[in-house]
Length: 286
Image (cartoon, rainbow, N blue to C red; front, side, top):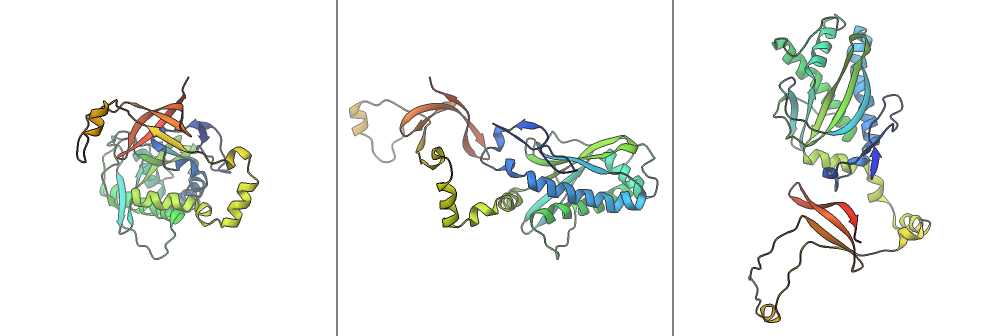
């Protein structure tokens, strides 16, 4: 199964299919195309208003996608906000942050920087300022709140492998092609997923019935799917001697049997994600 999640800033249309990460199964990251488009346009507006129109720069958003967080790096600092409703954070690649800072002071990014450039208090203050604007753009795309006051501060980076929203930024005149990354805690992820699929929850019974009536026959036949994770043989006397509280030693396999209407049709791999067990890599049973 695959779906495109790489976007273009021009029309934010799909360009290249990618294989879905099994770690995202159970959470609708594949429904974020429209949200990624809105976020890309909001970030593009921030860059245009702060650097392009005022300072003659040419920062543009070239793509928005969902990615897995890499190992923490000392080249950039995560800055976030903690609200009663949860927390969000953003990381700006340091070379891009320094180029923006250079433009902010009217140099149009002409000074070349790298990660070895000594940090300054000015950089920290500017990083907090631009992070606030970017996080405001993110929150606006999920739950607009005109009365919200944001104060950012350095926060711990997300654990490796957590899903982040990656926004690719380009500045052709500087030869700059880097990215900023957003991360949301579970509370904000829940709000995000709720915002991308409101129609499904609000659909009326009549409209649902009409949609079902005109859907293909295969989609209108309900079936029962069950999973058998393990089995154990017992003698009849052992079965009769079982009582509440008894413990049966078992060994959980790495795979499970998937039964459709009681018939064993698939074998699937058991994976753990977020403290829950999931099934992935389905294979037909010969």
